[in-house]
Length: 107
Length: 465
View: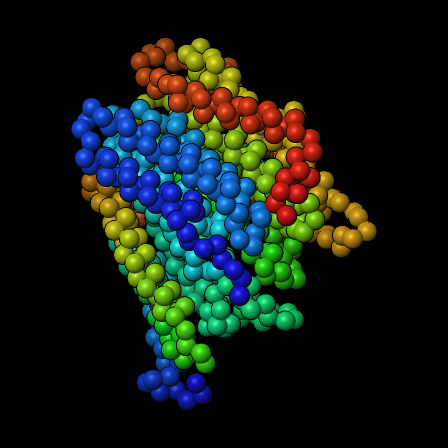
């Protein structure tokens, strides 16, 4: 763990961190709901990558991290399907999925 | 290692899963004339799952057993309230509601972080679908989109926190191998991230911002399905987390969140012009009161928390079913649309008043006793209880916010009872059927009964300990 190489824990964590930051950036700056959805997927995958990386470099590698990653993959797919269906429903009514202009609900 | 609840053939999750698939299958193979069967099959599934949950203790968490049973009971009542097939794709509706029950059951019995996350997702995904149920309605679609995007971000942050917890401790159990001494700052940061999902389900400030929009845009009966049972289940998970991983400052964090939630909810509710938005802010305030009860753990707080959950669940479910029956069919909770409810349906309007007054905390209804129990707990000054200034301030916040929130509930009542109906009363509302009336009767009985059960906190505490 000490040295930083292509096959070391810090390298994997760096990649996961970059993925996570990209996801946060997409959510924070983009107005399109599709981009926000992509950001969410990036964050979920960053977490999945961390699970397997921590698992691989653990002193006693167990199935827990890998099982968690498998769950993440399945749930992320289900979430993307539901989210796309709802975005499609919005698109059918307003011809747009812009988060700034979709503001019918307010106090 | 904490013993999790084994997933056996006799667990309520199995029952709900099998029933869910049966409903889905029946919806596909049955002829249109027999579709009514799917609705009753779903109600039956929830009833059986509730009975199983009552007789199957949650391993390692006695609080989980009644909480899980209550969550499934709420799901069953939501299904019973809406058994009229034909209005919409009823099989899909029942399947999604049952799936929320499955997720709630899993959340309430989770003993590790991945199961917790899975349970939260299993409650959320069908909830997103239900929120956007009337796909051609622009507001419902917007509610669904906001719900799924905010929910997705909360879920991703939670999972990122959990993956760090795993990396830091090599554990996924709630106890995290019970690190001796104070927790390291990185571990606390990861822990905070991993509890965002729970805060989101409980609609605690600052994870509450989606609730008013979703409650306003989604159909009222769908709001009843996505708001109450998940809150009960998330509270069970909070209690388990606090029991297995006690850390100094938990009472400060919980009481702080409670004060902010109570304060923001009561003032924001005053300026709303939509009954469901008012109920959304009411839910945020009640979540604050629940966290205040959890901040008093241990002690008799388990009983008080459980009583509060039951009182809140019964009154809130009743209120949403009443609103669903009183609102015009194309669904808007605007206060102006409630005008004349008293002349159209006096019985249901009277029941709505009962539920709202209970939520406001008027004696002798359940909401009053629930608030009283939490206040008594927070202000307790026994020899064995350490000094908790933040919990005391939380009690003050609860006390001060109650009359302000009550004013907001009175706005709904004023619109429903006193306001004159518009001259062109062409708006058609739903005709209450036997199922919906039975649900309202059960909720009203629970609201009255829980309010007169004076030793509820100690009795329920003995059960949940």
